[in-house]
Image 1 (spheres, rainbow, N blue to C red):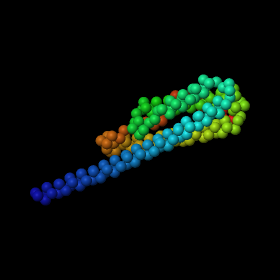
Image 2: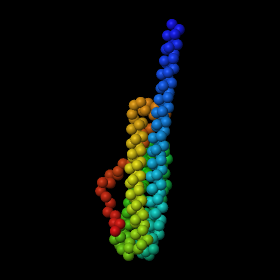
Image 3: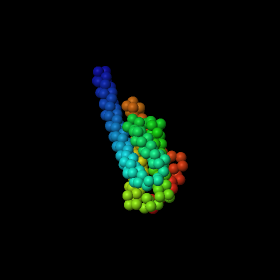
Length: 200
């Protein structure tokens, strides 16, 4: 009897030890996936910041035209300020409303910048032909390409993380340790129609 009880206790200890090791490995895997999402988010934020940093140069270049529409410049400056005032941290990436607020501000900034560029190209061709304006256009276009690449990388990291959080048995460890699904970027309604911005 004694040896049977000892065997049962030994088996239980081994099962608990195995479950503990598996749980630690699963937890570490979740931490790694979460860190990857936060790193991709930081990269994306840095790219958005690059675009925001280019806008004052664009506005200063355009303000050189004495009779330029102040309303358009004000709209761009206000959109930049709104976008700069909305920051997200790792915890906010679980909050769909906060992510959408950030996306809306970035979309408004993109639209205002596109309107400014189109207005210059159409109504002020001599300004649009200057080297400084063309250089800014190239930098903005490159930054938009970087933003798209970073969004794709962020979404891939979120998809990997969310897949890990939702699969069994990882979902059990995730539930106990507070790992929630992250919100990916989704295209805005009408995003399938490219805006008419001329970089010629």
